[in-house]
Image (cartoon, rainbow, N blue to C red):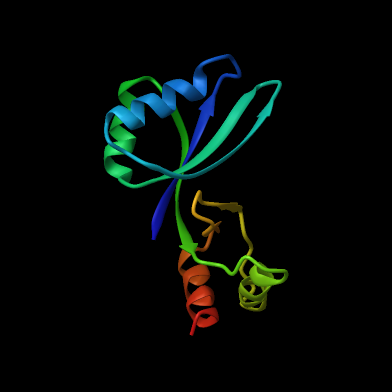
Length: 127
């Protein structure tokens, strides 16, 4: 399983740039990201190529990591109903999702409070 980092960031110019530059200078690729801003700040989720190095890098530049969770990352057909076929297996297994976004190359990132059950449901879907 991959690792998703939730970053709690202030909403001001240059904040995302600081994250991207720090990771880039450390040689870490951002494979996927999503975020949402509110009046209180922003939460940005990133999945990276090297979780351990990313954690150290982000903490060293003062970025608040407000969450970290194992996630499943899998290819999904880019067609109507492509994601629904996978999500049917997740729902049928009774697994609730806490996170969903796509990577830059179109893979689906899924998180759950029950990562092992999610992994098993997705494994059944891709057999």
